[in-house]
Length: 333
Image (tube, rainbow, N blue to C red; front, top):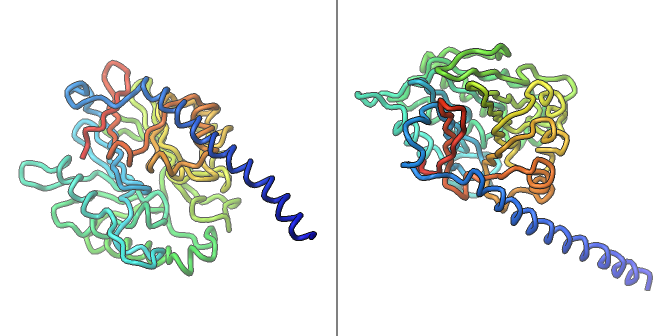
């Protein structure tokens, strides 16, 4: 009798709770879609030539690959999930070809040679740096330098070291870079530098002591990009649960565009973080339906911002105009 009573009580609690979460999720999607009309991605014709300083958010499902373009300069921040993720127990085709083909399409010169001023691996998770192995070994892609923070296993949880083999992935990329004679910068600079017409600054460049044992996301490098009065922040897998949101938020300040941290999963894009940054628009490197309900709530009810999934739009380009606007287009792939 007691067991049956306990089951009933649990059912009375769980079922209404799940129903409330479901309704909340629907409500936030409806509100978010309403906000999205304000910055709905435009056609290639409407995008125009005035948007030649660009951030390309590739569609690599729930992983990151972001190409920066400004005044003839190109850089790649993360490269998406590769084909051999140790986490996956079954065969899986990653996004190596998608990323390489896109880099070639956008950056190739008249001889078919691609020049990347730099690549940045924000942290050692495979869904961010997995495709670097193939990209670095692509003969037609020339990389001037690679920003790759030295891997620190003390930050990671045991399964990240033992099952996900982050150290092996990191070491493979280091060896790839050495074979191609690419300059490796492990002491990531925190000073602002010019990249074409963009000002760029890396944040969380030194592994914080408080992140030890909290997971590799604590090592995530955020990228602040500015042109004129318009600012974008690419939050990699920065989360509140690792303590990094609290550190970088005051350094970032208000932004116009936010690439949400950790694909919109639990622990990212907290209410406090969004209040500090107050973004006008949000890009999520994921499918809208996979963004956690509490994160959708924060996007729509706290930030009151439209949010766009790269999966839903098959990639998005944010163009920074000379007139001080940011215009989005989904005419990317």
